[in-house]
Image (cartoon, rainbow, N blue to C red; front, side, top):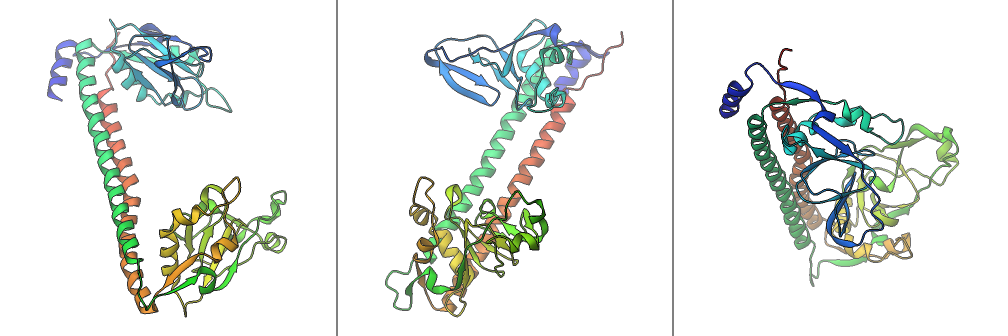
Length: 384
């Protein structure tokens, strides 16, 4: 920071002037791109690049500001581009402000807070024109951009390393899980069907959505969106006794292996750690523990995700109870199942620790970055 302090002491010891965004740039609307030919010029919407075309709408450095949708999703561009109607581009007076400095400054201003619509978030040019911006001397802007570029690169590098670490741990876990579940011609292992190791196999139901008195009760009601290779200790939705009575939903005890059978979630599995009910897109296996441990069955089904999913039928690749109950499972003696489960539980805990800790670590780093960025972009206003 010392170089920045020196620059501030030299060029603006008494503070900096503030003006409005309209004084440092012209905010322009995007245009329709459908009539343009294909090429290598990116077309930006509020969500990012949507296609590449053969001409540009602007070919100088610019900050793109969404007009609709994700209002805080700004872009800095230093190559020719095209923008559609949902995002503004800026023609910046570079004798007053470095475009990259404007990008960092506006990104720190949380433009989404200026939303002027009740439905889809929206910004108007008249609102943006009035946004106050500081104009520190160009050498000061340049040094701030240099520091923030370095911060940004370090932040991206750290996030990539953390995510790579998580992916490596997951692959390591899957490798050892699959090794433990390969039995070749072991004479002590029986090959059975999933239905054969169950005391009971059931599905569920959905109370009529038109009856509000069917929902919001004390009965946990699971949907397939929540079935995602983990223990389930609570559900997002609940139903009432009346909803249970007037639907196909039914109670299942804790520690069933639940397999999703519909659409995008098909073949995912989970274990319910509480008694609950489910919708009709769940196949619920109550395991006969004289034959198999529920956690052993869960690990086996998890390891078979791709193979089981490939058995899906119809336009949505749905599974059904028949496919699930006929799926093969190797059944070693219970003592061997216990040994396998103990090893995989330890692996699972390790991976879950990282899975839960990673987003928190990334969030903490982002807050740290934003703190220092905001400090760098806060200026004393020069007395008039």
